[in-house]
Image (tube, rainbow, N blue to C red; front, side, top):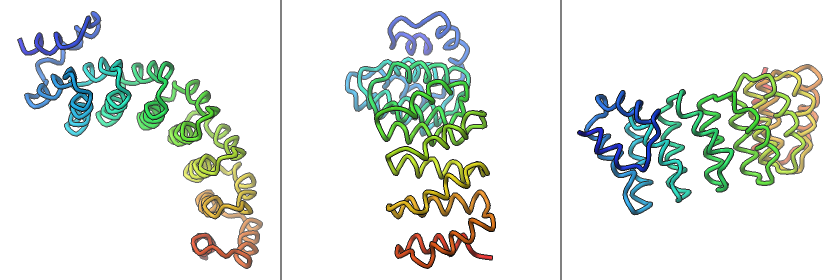
Length: 246
């Protein structure tokens, strides 16, 4: 009877969803049932808060209900459900539903969260969606896509991050350099080195940190020493000192 009360909260579940609901009904904790029911409350804030509470509980049995709520008319509710699915970390149903939503979603905030979550879940077969996102007109979308990509082992990732070093937005270039540094991409040394002359101090600092992560060649060390003689920004000077430590 508990299962019936939960499934009736949502309109027209598919056969597959019904099967999954029957399979998981026996393991739905009592406190999870309360918050799953609240996903159907009339007030958007209550539905959003329910998704947040489900994320806190990390209840795998709530996944089918979160997926169903991805069609909520309110962007804040959809975004909370995406975050909850990422926190729970279920990697069978969730990636399929999240990829589908990414292709359809219009809200920039929800799209950013989708990219972050798919990156976190390492859904590497979403590479076509991410390749499209790194060319998005919205700077924050490009940044989120690159940050997600940098966590993957897909062979196209390094190329996409290197291309992003030419992006006009400094935040995008910084994200790309951070990713290349974490990945220790040796082919990125020269393209990143060109960023140490950027007029924006945050870009110069990110370039120095990325080069340090990848590993400094003798030539790069000399260029960083030259930069140290002319650099005025304290945070960049500190990054230079850290990078040039013996």
